[in-house]
Amino acid sequence: MKIMICGSMTFAKEMMEAKAKLEEMGHEVKVPCDIDEHLKDTSFIDNLEADIEHAVANNVLKTCFGYVENSDAVLFLNYPKNDIPGYIGTSSMMEMGLAFHFGKKIYLLQEPPHFNDARWAVEVNLIQPMVIDGDLTKIVS
Image (tube, rainbow, N blue to C red; front, side, top):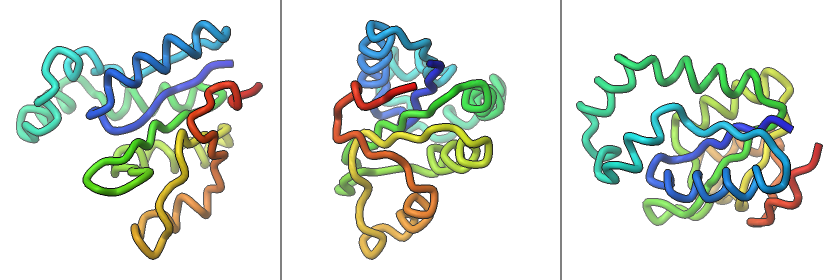
């Protein structure tokens, strides 16, 4: 199965680990096209001016949206971030909406927060992703 991994670039290292595991399981896996920038410099995500300039110059959103469109499934690595368990950021929400629109299988690594704790979790609940509780073997064709 073709799988796109999405999530906060804070977790670039974890994306590469999940990619390796999924490939060992026989899947074809894409990660964000600019992951190497984030692996080289873990503070890159916090330099918003440089990140925006890089993303615009390299057409990162459109490229990653294409990865979502051409995948069978999308896995969101929604680790805790900013004291929010099951964090899903704005770029991931856009990718999730696109995956939903195109009828892709949508997986969350962890349970999202309750919508009373994070307003954006309403939309996640509407999309009804499969929560795999950290178990990549639950991703099936």
